[in-house]
Image (cartoon, chains in turn blue, yellow):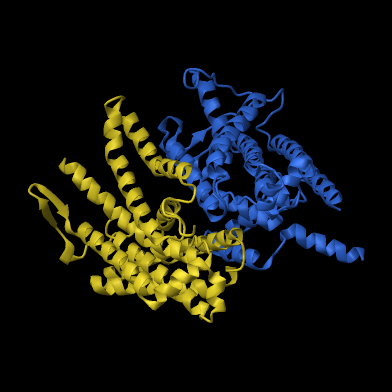
Length: 323
Length: 304
């Protein structure tokens, strides 16, 4: 059933740009592209949050680091001066995206190595605090725009594709999402994934059977950070703008809500969650300026009453029909 | 030298403020096992209620009462409506639900008072400065804050170590289930502890008003710093909150005051200022990382 739902989801997502009129005109393709990119970030967070049970409250940091990698490489590409006098700037997507994932991964390695020494509520607070540290770092970097952020005047170059075209960006995002979901699916089914799930259920027991749990958690943390970096790099290309807003702590909260809303620990639930939350925010924002006034209570109700998220809800419906 | 003394006192004053928030947060976590992100909202609501009352009536005493009442009542409402349902849930649900509360409260404040920050005058009785040492004037109001903080810390110490409620609080922090099994009305204890935490957060907000502008988002700024304090001090430990708060307050203030000047001896002025500001914002987080490397459970772990 999981496979069928996943294929259906991707088929529907692939078909959306073909029928722009059905979804409210070509302008909404940008909105859908944003949903797709947030979905990548949510799926990556789900790997540690949903499967591993690691409540990271700083996931937006890796999103922002990915975005800033693209932005900073572009700024140096335009100015011609290499970054730190060593690394030349570039606007090639095939270079910037791996670079973004590398940067996010390295930060995740450093932050994870420290944070994973703790568990429970301390881990939540520490990941949040480290994300704030990265946030303040970029706010203070006046060279790269500081508070105001950094404009990426032209999107990166990928072969002869026109990345200014949102439909093209949408499909690039979708391919990236599919690739990352495939990777996560492989991970979850592997021995590594089994250990990760076991860690969520009972870490002490996993340690007792001779598994060094710290290493598993750290590797998962880095893979998740790299996924968020990928999402951030593509987002910088879609919006042609990066700012500290991308790594604000509220963004981390939103990513967590996407995972919970869609269904933590399910492969494609977070994709639904990202679409639902971004859609809900856009709808509320179009209706009233004070949309957070309504979003807050909605979130509380989701947490209090919707166990298992959208995916759990659909899965239980399908099971009932099957009987 | 006089500047160092002045900044040291400023650091202690920030530390005292952080302590009032951290004590509530750490007690609530220690007793109920709840992580309450909306603690910063109580700080904000206390500040707003006091600011509005002070602007309307001009009386600092009334403002104090209004701020405490607003924070206390709101705290009880939050506990009754939302948090009570979250005691048995995992931390993730608690974080998300209280995150929803923050969005709601921030937007409510914007709806009622607008986005413009409000400014509060220092109460007339505490205006001016005194000379601590010959040639070292220091604002009276900041000294008052430090004094209030010391009184609160002493009061909490007496409450926790010398009274029956304090005994129950200590027992609850050690083993919640056992306290309940012995026939203590744990719900009442929860309400008392939560109300106390809310009042302290509100008090900190009221006192912060005249020093910084009262604005939306002030709660989260200080909340995250409070987290750092709680983690450094050890979760659930009031003693840890005292030391953690003073450490964070002094380190943060000292870095902000002296790092840009120090950097300016090495590089251009404007760059040094920007980098100094950034590095000093990061300083307390680096401090936290350092503490965690040496003591993963904080400096004064509450249990074992």
